[in-house]
Each structure stands twice: as C-alpha cells, then as structure tokens.
Amino acid sequence: MSLKLNSSGGGSVTLQEPVTATNGTLTFPEGTGTVAVNGLSSNIVSGAITASTSGTAIEFTGIPSWVKRITVMYSGVSLSGTSNPIIQLGSTTYTTSGYLGSASTGAGTAANMSAGFIISNASAAADTAHGMSTLATLNGLIWAFTSTITYSNQAATRYSSGSITMAGTVDRLRIQATNGTDTFDAGNINILYE
Image (cartoon, rainbow, N blue to C red):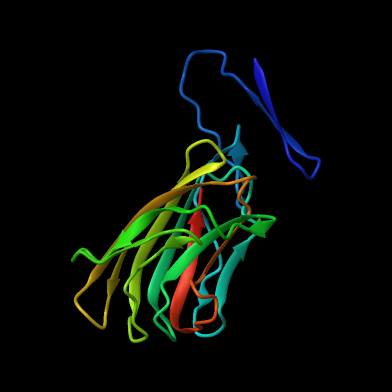
C-alpha cells in the first residue's frame, strides 16, 4: 500500500509501506511552512512578533482553516487608559459580540465578557502585562478561552475564561481595548498556532 501526498503547488510525495513490519522514518527536506495531514499540523507555527507600542489594535490575519489552538503571548504590554484589553476572533470580519465568560482579579473583582474575551480586568494605565492566553476549538466553530496575566508594576494576577460560537472558520485575531480607543504604549505580542 502506498500513500501519496499532494501539495497545493502541484508536487507530490509517495510513501511506500516497508516490505517487512518495521518502524520507518520519514525525513522531509529543510524548508519553511507547515506539513498538515488530515487537518493536523505537524508543528507549531509562530506569527510575527509585533511591538505593542502604538495603535488601537494588534491584528494577526491569515490563520489557516486547520488550526485547532492559538496561543497569544504578552511581554510588557500596556494600554494608555483603563479600558480592559480583549481578544476578538474573526471569520472574514471580526465578531464583536456573543463572548461568554468572565475575568477576575482573584480578589473578588470580576467582569463579564460580551464584546470580546477579556484578557485582564480592573486595568490601570500603568499596568504592564506578561503572560499568555490560549484559545482552542471544540468543533471548528465553538472556541474556548483561558488566560493568566501577571504584572511587573504590581504584585497582581488576573484570570479569565470563556467561550464563543463563531459563524464561520476563524481566520483572524485581534487584541484591543474594550472601548476601542485606548492605545498600546509598551511591550510585544505574538501568537503561536497549531
């Protein structure tokens, strides 16, 4: 029995089963990109690190349709005001409502989600955030979210989790303030997807 892998660029690779029952090793040539078999990625793909030092939103577009999990990473990220930072997912356009869940300071202050996944609540302009948020799909349309953030300007941790049902396949993600007008003024953000 053989297995033929076709590329979108027109090439193909054919794998033959060994004559005897042994373990085999498949070696691909060096290169860039992602090998996906049956919608499963063979590696973790990194987006481009983005300085979060200006603008009202940081966007990552072109997320492939086979992606099952996205990790958003923050290093020293700060906003100019007190509006809570959120993540919004999109399928051609961004979804700006229907996010369910809440965010907590761990000390009793909580905020419910609606316009996006809240990364951190009870925000102050001086807050400098570090940590990660993880999003994973249950079935391609339903996405679950969890996040843990700490601050370097104070001894505090923020927790949040939630979910959303999307109308289509996720192909983009953005981070912004809930009010849409506070600007980024420090740090770096990047994503990994798999």
